Amino acid sequence: MVRTGVTDFVFSTMWFSQMPFLTAIQVQESWAYANDVNLLAAGASNPAIGSGGSGIYAGHNGALVFSMSPEPVRKIIVSDVKKIIPGKKKQDEKKGHQEHSYHQDLTIPRENYPPEIMDAYRISTENMSSYTSEKIYFGEFNKEICSNDKFCCHFNISTVELPVFDGKLTYEYRAVAYKGPRYWGDRTGDVLVCSIVSCSGAEITDCGVRYPDFLKVAPRMRFAHVKISGEFPSSQDVLTTATSLSYSLSPLSRERLHMHRWHSSARSHRNTITGLGNIKGHLDFAQGTVLMMEKVQVQLKGPPADDLHTLGLFARDYSAETGSSTAMALSQTWLFFILSLSFILY
Image (tube, rainbow, N blue to C red; front, side):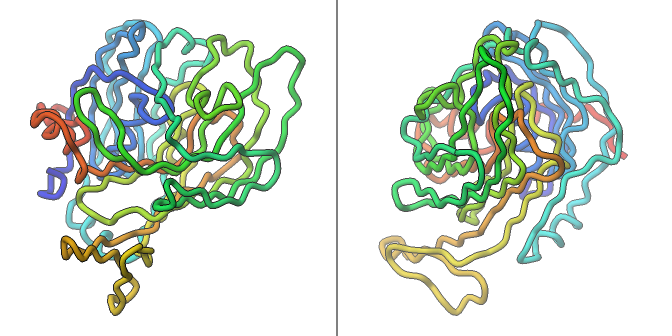
């Protein structure tokens, strides 16, 4: 739909949030950004079972207003939304190097509840045992981490240690890389991930797990500099975006993130195609197809952050989708479906 020029979407949902990459506001904003479209998402509010999250999002400008209440509520959220001009988008996409800084022109309240209030919000956790990871220690962290030696992520991170009072719980952090299947109920689909995640213990299986009482938690690691990059397929079947999540279970404001993407050379276990200018790809002799690659990078901007659950890059590869035909059809738009257009554009 986006490729045909649709720029404005309305979505009603009963989304069940999951850490560290698939909480409701986090996904809604990321999807709107990745497609550079306006999105009005209305979520069922039942936090006791982990369902909720509504917002209005303005493509590369991020969230205009959102609500993810720890209590079941009925609420109307309102915002002015600027019309996205498809012609301008196409001109930007023709450039080999795309760069996006996120900023808001309007001062509109974003409903961030304090982290301790969000303790009541039930959230499941992804099993990350298949992820490749390394613990992030204080100071400089410059690593390349590869998933199955096929998909590599580059981390350039600087952190400082904060003083912590006795008796307080603290999160550890890991840099993770993953390329492979993820299970979505009755189907599977491939994801590609390069990210920082918080962990409530020393093992990878502790990552994405929140402490149940935030008042007992204190930040111990402050991220002064974060730059994460990887090579992702440049394909209509792959949707790649920046993702973030704070202690309050909301994404970082988009002016805090800076994202670059540009065509890059690609490593291949079969062959590397040359003679394509600055674009190279994988040659699959069995299929006779070329897989173009692009380098994608996300960088933390502004003041240091000490309230992170997630910061990185997350991609869905729909070419490997399996499951029911209904599920596959829904997955093609990341579970977003046009119901009606009910917000005013100017």
